[in-house]
Image: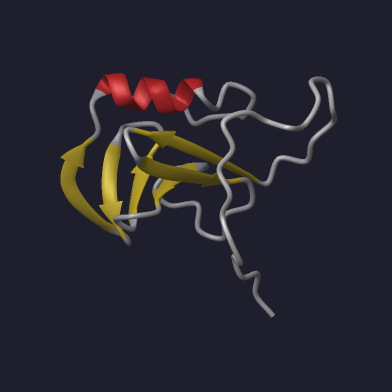
Length: 101
C-alpha cells in the first residue's frame, strides 16, 4: 500500500507553535507560483541526496549543481545561482550536498 496525497493545503502562516519538536519527512518550497518538494527518505537518491521535485513540471533539481533532470535525463539546463541559493536557504535545518557551482 503506497501513500496517496488526498489534498494539499497552503496557509499563510504555520499554526505549529515555535519550539515544537518535528519529524521532518518533507519540505515544500513555493516561489513565484512554483512548488518544489524535498523528501527526507526519497527512494531515489539521484541526482543529489536530497534533491528537489518540481510538482508542476516533473523536473528534479540537483541541490549541489543546480542542474535540472527529467527522470534520469539531464535537460542541459540549470536554475540560476540566485534561485539555487534561495532554495538551499529554505533548507538550512537539513544536511545538504556540497555546493558544486
